[in-house]
Image 1 (tube, helix red, strand yellow):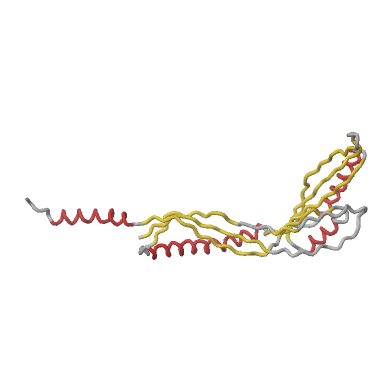
Image 2 (cartoon, rainbow, N blue to C red):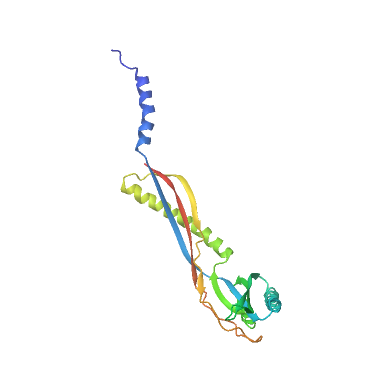
Length: 229
């Protein structure tokens, strides 16, 4: 039988080797993450007015005037977001099932940076509104800055995990094939207990509240696929 020409044999082996090497590679799916605790620098407060009247029109008028006053006063402070919340009225019944009066409740929401000015504002609003709850969180600006710093850390964690697996199976060469940036800015709000004091009979001076804002955790996750050889 005639032997193969040396040039032909060399070509056949050269084309077969990449296919053999590709079969030996391992595709690995994994993820890496990084997180950081940051100081809460944002306040979100809900205040409300509640009253009772025998006439629903008089009730609505009183609530509307009180809420309007609160919105106007809060809107004077720069850098603070102010909005109206839920407003509702409901009847009260006597023993015979007849309407004996009306109750009403309306909310305003105030949010902004944690500053002494905002604390003073909330104290003034408590002169004629009740403070329902306060939550602390991280501002958009601080969250974006933290996420930007965490992305490289998450990618390094992703590569480190891939390297650990590669060493364990004797395939230390790593090639990233796919990368996805997952959950960002996971903020755990710091809640403050709800306040339900009796409604003030008249507008009064209130000492500005003092709070411990606490911290929130922001995390970034990176997932993807790597090829190990």
